[in-house]
Every structure is written in C-alpha cells, then in structure tokens.
Image (cartoon, rainbow, N blue to C red; front, side, top):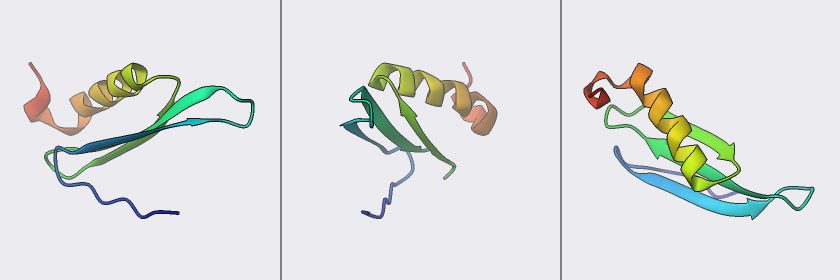
Length: 64
C-alpha cells in the first residue's frame, strides 16, 4: 500500500469499486492546522461535505 503524505490544505481522492461492485471514493484531507481527515464515501461531493462538517469541530478558522 502506498504511504500517503499531504501538506496542510491538500486533499487527495481515489475512485474504486468495493467488493459488491459499487463505485466509491477514498478521500483524504489535511487541515491547515495539520489534522487529518480520511473517509470512504459514495461520491466525491459526499466525502467533501463530510469533511467540511468535520472541519467545523477541528479548525475554528474555517467557521463562517
């Protein structure tokens, strides 16, 4: 397995099919403060939404 290094503010995603043939996305993001978010989701948009919800509790500078 490839080791993953992300700089603060950087994101990475990879599309794949699970064991049942369902298309999914593996999404990773490193916040500006160095916190690491990693998830598998049905779509890139859903993964980014989950990450944004997670950021609210992690990086106060992201709050509007």
